[in-house]
Amino acid sequence: MRIFYDHQVTSLQDAGGVSRYYYELVRALLRTNEVEPEMMPGFNHSVFPFRTMGPPSRVWSYQSQLRPGYLRYFLNEALTAALTPARGEFDIYHATYQRISPFVRANAVVVTHHDSTPQRFPHLFGNADAIRKRLQKTYERADRILCISEASRADLLEFFCVDPGKTTVIHHGFTALPDVPDGSHCDLLPRQPFLLYVGARHAYKNFQLVLEALPLQPDDDLHLVAAGGGAWSAAEVSTIERLRLTERVHLLPRVTDAMLAAAYREAEMFVYPSLYEGFGFPPLEAMHAGCPAIVSAAAALPEVCGEAAFYFDPSSKEELAALIERLHSDAGLRSSKRERGYAQVRKYTWEAAAAKTLSAYRRAMET
Image (tube, rainbow, N blue to C red; front, top):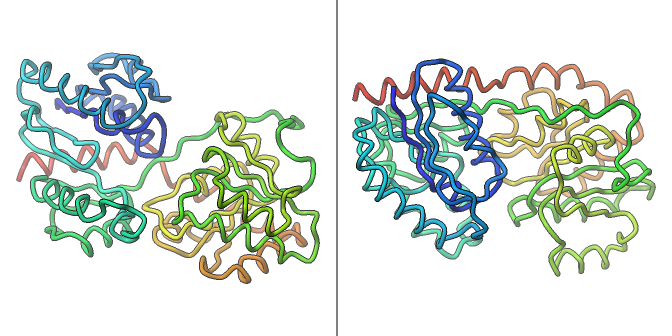
């Protein structure tokens, strides 16, 4: 089966969950020995080594220092227009973002619906209506729509006019971070017990709630580490100063996988207060490291984390603070879900995701 994956996601980001999804999915599909993928990362600076996929894949990838965005996007669309006509008709064209390129010929078109963040929080996006219209057109043209969770499928059907019969739910696989030697310590992490937050801090990620909950602790020995997500914003600096948390809050603006693995291993707890996720990798990473996960009861998170996490209402800083305090003072409670966490992570493999995706491709070609 010949499958084409376009440049859209690698044009618009150098890292991130969507890039990881396509990288891991194609790697797993190659192991089935049933596909011949062609990928068009084009001019990119991705942290994922698409160009090392190897045969029978064909990868059009060129290292570039151009920043992610529209300039790189249009350059890669021109490259697609120049190269793909000579490649003939593919069995499947799996579009990687919001548009379907007119230059790719295929028997069937497949798209993946990751989440409905712009539709759920339109006030955070200046072009939310344009995104919705663009996606509606894409979903109408698609022969099959893959959804990464039941929650993301429910949102798809809520916000878009889509035939439910052409949707398929396929959970992500899990990618383990590198092992951290026992007894090792990352010098960038505090020696005091700390609560760990990982990833971007956009408004819907609800990081502000963690800052607001921290001073409600009766003891001030618990610190907070924010890993990834770039430098503090001016608003975050103001909040940290207002709450007198300067000495208790630590930022690692950019982290390697090894640093992240060390942070999960050393953290007393992990917190994920997001108001909305289509899936959510970080809680699974925490569970894999044996770190107790405190997760908001929102969107796909209960579906993905099951009974292996501690949940709270993401609108209540008091509820979050009380849960953190209970866990901080009770080591037995913190460890009570560790085995469930390990078992939960084992449910998500890229081999299973690839097998279900291959079945969805076949169904798309039958329509």
